[in-house]
Image (spheres, rainbow, N blue to C red):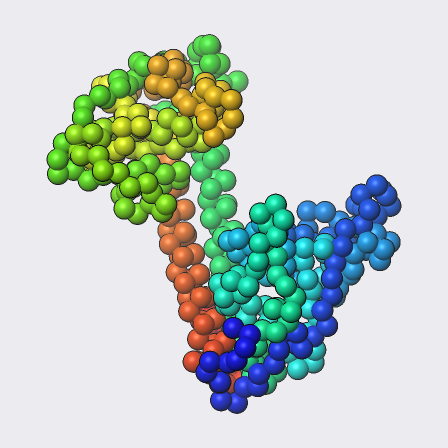
Length: 431
């Protein structure tokens, strides 16, 4: 990548990455000196570089701490990680939006007058995979870059005005991505609040939440699980499910269970372990069953079957009794408080060895509506929240795909922009 340019872009010049500006190293102020910490200057480390625009950090240093143990760089500085385990999978890049200090695992470049810093930042992101191939193994399994390799990278750039045009177009798209991510986080928080209400108050007449127990004590009963609606019962999982023990049948798809995804096609799972088991060697899952990974139930790895299928015999398959809606049960078991219960009853010394056996699972108790109609109404409410999240997730994926393609096209000159059309082009991305 740093030896020559494969396809020169007409009208663009070629420069070494090391020549686009001034390079600076960071550091860590002494932890033993309280005067160096809890100041107003963000101290950026790799764990802070989850977003392209860096406006804050987990830790803050003082001016004295930064002057002695680190360095302060101005807004617009390009920062990127040069050392750490994170380089095994990604190459974090950020642009400081305010004065920041940074640690020794990060390098900073203050771009010169011929180079736009955001253009450089996007160029680094667009070339992430090729740049990662330059990282070499360091001590304790970490990765690091040889600075000669990084500074020797060849970068093609148009004149400054076109660099800024490209950067602003990509910035407009980034704003849409950030807005969508914020909306997803909001919907997820709303869902958690809705689940908390639904699993403690349920749905009364006219499809509305019951009032809180202190406001309507006559509608609640006190149980071993606390106050629950009067027409609910405290049921163990054994009251609601039996263990399905049938062997698999030929002709059914083989599925896996993944965190956050439920039951999915086995072929879609990365790093799957190939199996030569015949269908009869698998466990049968019937439509509506709930199956879970015995070794990861403490993390909420379970799913509800939408059709008959096969799963690994290492999974546990639960067959519902007539008193339970598995739509309701799936959401109940996926709730954070339920996962805490699963973890408490899982057996093992370390997390990787924790197992939740069915004979232990069946003793866990929950408050459950006696009416299937109310269970279904609760599931409807939660799935409406899921639909909002899924819609925004699909939109986010669309924007991210567009961003990747647009970076590729703009930063390689495949698509050329006219500077005098910049303002309209930048606004058009969000319309």
